[in-house]
Each structure stands twice: as C-alpha cells, then as structure tokens.
Image 1: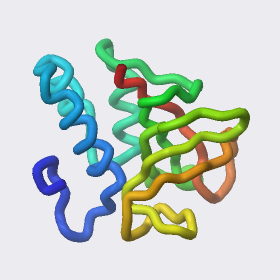
Image 2 (image 1 turned 30 degrees about the vertical axis):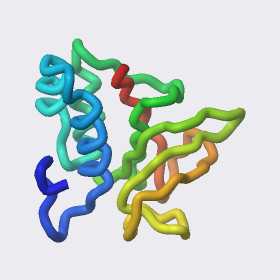
Image 3 (image 1 turned 135 degrees about the horizontal axis):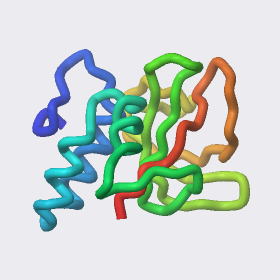
Image 4 (image 1 turned 90 degrees about the horizontal axis):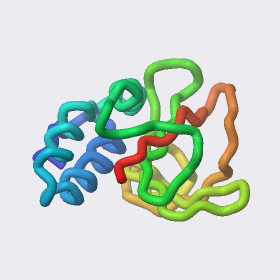
Length: 133
C-alpha cells in the first residue's frame, strides 16, 4: 500500500481499495489516471470527488464491484469497502482496516456481511456507492 501513499499511522481502508482499483485499471491508462486524480486517503473526500466526475458515477444502489462508502456519524471520518455480493437487505463486502468485531479500525482485510440500510446515527452511516465499471 506504500505504492499508493500509505504511511505508518494512517488508517488504511482507503489505501486498500485504492490499491485494488489501481491494479484492476493497470491495462487502462485513461481510467487509471482519472481514478488516481479523484482518490484520496479520506473516504468521504473521495466520495465527494467522484460525485463530480464525468468518468465515474456514484449512486445509492449497491452493485457488485462498486466501492461502498460510510461516514462515521456526521463527521469527516469514514470507511470504505468493495461490494462483492448484494442480497435482500444485505451486502457482502471486502474491507481493509477492519476486524472480526466489525470495527473500522482493525488489523486485517476481511469479508463482511453487512445490513444494507440508510441510517443517520453515531456509527457508520452509508453515504453511497462509487461505480468503477
């Protein structure tokens, strides 16, 4: 993840998803350049950047391969993952910087099954999805 800017002490969920996308776009220089320009270490800033993009779309519907972005409470901190599967009221994701208790500060990359719901509380609140394909 150091290749995409991670440094010791940084939360790394965003760097993990960035690294996966950079590797996926390796054969498409145009998309790779646009992606790198929009992506930041902040999940919520990344979502805002992609919201104004002409190359990528954002939305409220979960789709396999999309990035899912959450905001912690109403602040600037957040969490991000990759949508792997969509079910009725739930999504399966792949997330970095997580743990087996479901926290966003963790020690591993993990597959998670999460309830798909729009909330506005003190925990992780779904912001939306960034569609990469």
